[in-house]
Image (cartoon, rainbow, N blue to C red; front, side, top):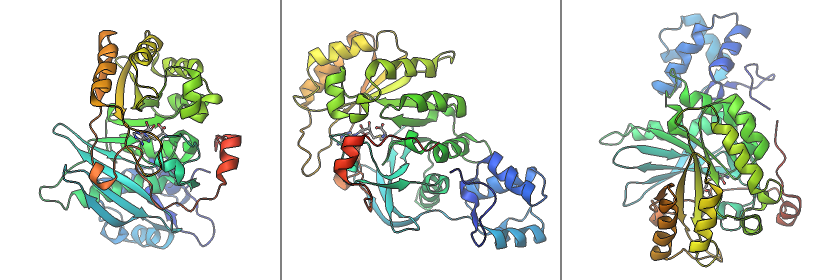
Length: 373
Ligand code: SAH
């Protein structure tokens, strides 16, 4: 269910979760003009204001009315860890006692916030520690955007203050299984009156939910990343069980449709480097062949270990050799440096606090991939 502007009796509307269209619809229910949405968006997302009394370009009766009907509430940081390399990780508490993790990764030329989309994850990829936590529920739009709001709030307090230039939906969860809440969040990220990020700087990463990749193209124009991890269906089916439902050929067709007709756009393919599993030069050659006619770039992610993972990170020389094969095939290929490893903030290490509501055996058997829309 998308959060709409009208609250059920006794429940306040959290304006943090409404995109511009949602806010305009909300103000229409109050017989207020649409420009109120523009004003409130700027107060909340650009100035970080949560108190309606401080929204001085709204008339006083409207401020009082909003205070009675609505809130602006972001998830609360319960802990912050700072890595030696500048990476910061927050554990954010949600209203129901669950918690998710959000990571800030500064680099010389940009600063990326890695945001979660679900409490836990139902996809059960074999090398991911989030999968081991189980799945509880989708995050609301307010909880997704609230991670950006809360991080920005905290980052402006630092000396010197930092700003977020990029947002990636690469934290906990599968964003395309939470489509109806994720899309308004993406719209707020690229909305000039809210975070104003360019669509190239907002990236949704998916394990490959084919129909929802097409739906995303229609709903919101952001950058797409796909967790591929293997060059053939047999191996990918082991690592990413979703592949049994949407095999590689169908997934790559969806990627081609996603970028078709869009100038200068590429899909990013993520590939976790697992020693002795998917990291040989033969794997690299097959991978390069798959992407032959794809506007693509490749991110190689050295596996980040966690207790009981059952995998090891590929040796640096294997990763280099793998990368050389892709480069020789003309593919832009970057090896992701592991950031925040000392605070368990690297890819696949986010665990949050998840009250698992699924039984693992059932999840594996049924491939819990039903979409919510
Ligand atoms: N469900 C989405 C979003 C999660 S993004 C997706 O699959 O794309 C998190 C990224 O980190 C994915 O590419 C995921 O495959 C990768 N990852 C998961 N566990 C990892 C680990 N232990 N080491 C390195 N990368 C990992």
